[in-house]
Length: 101
Image (cartoon, rainbow, N blue to C red; front, side, top):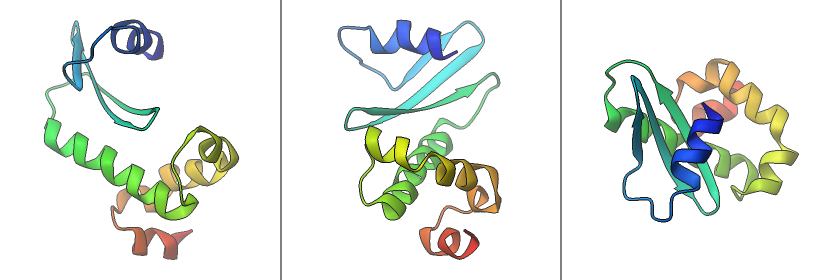
């Protein structure tokens, strides 16, 4: 899917929509600076909910790292994994996730 996203979205000259459908799969993304945060769905999903989760993820990462860019993602990869894998991923508030980690 990452290859399809790269070919269909990143290589496009102008990105008009944050949603790209390729067959039965929907690629939903938000862009923060030069970073794209991607969600992939194979079913009918509530797009507003997906976008809110993606934006909240960026907000949580920014609260931990101070900035959300490629260097901070690379330096904090283990922490990102813990946030996404553990109970903190179920919570959208930064205060609650700081308690969990």
